Length: 413
Image (cartoon, rainbow, N blue to C red):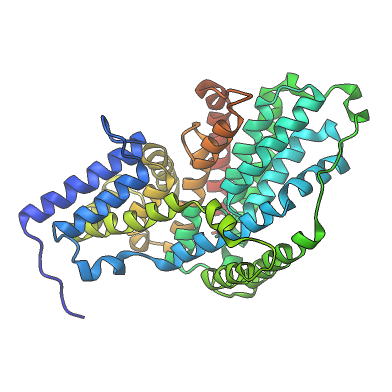
């Protein structure tokens, strides 16, 4: 491989300016005084890295991990096909009807968490919010505790697998950890975390229990067209089975998405319209931004920082990841730290800690993860979830689940 020419002082300075400016937008959500959001900042930063020759045009695509992008896009298609067919709405209502309204809180938590473990948690939140609003309205219950349960449980449940959330997809693609290995180590963290979430929300919102007579009210199931549901369900099940059999996740998901696009009844444009293109663009631009920063010496600085702060210690590393994830958001944090993990004494444990901490840290504040924002925005016409409302639950849930995750991984390692 031909060695790349060294960067000039001006190029190194430009790389750091572009990197810091991009991460400032990731932290603030937009550039001060301009309407530049996170995906826009990633695109602008990536293009500027190429324009300043920090990243050569011929090398720009080489910095993009297309396995991650393909996996993310394909899972969006698979999950959206299930959603459009009514699978999630029907399943959630059917489960609640079976358990009874008096168990609404654990039903919401475990339904959100289990769905999020195998499918992208953002989509699960989109489905669960109107369901929770509808059922709490019928039962005359305060909706906020149950909406908080959706947000926190979807984040906690998504820690279990490679396909639970975007940062796990990135980690799975970069680390090479298999789907089964990931689930074996982090599945128990998700399960224990959901139990902790249930206990804390029930304790903090003790007055939100279902009234004694609520169970008598019938809960009608939404209409379900089995002819529309059969194919998406079969494809999704096949994709998950392929994951467990060891098929590369990107390939298995891509085959599933391709199969769903061959249809006589479902218009492909409906699926395309539901794909989060902004997130895909964000990933592509961010790969180039971080690639340019690495060329400018970011990796060496991170390794120096790791030695100074003793990030080799799992507890310190977990805390640092959680802090950075709340400052710049979890995907940019993982993108930045992925070059550090291979240099740790135990990279396998480092990848798992990175996935666990970056995901569970998303429950700290309402802006900590996209799932939280989806819940807040989807409920806004009817219910307002304030920053303090979320913080009251988010702080203890985050602290407790991070402790559980760190303790479990320390024990199994």
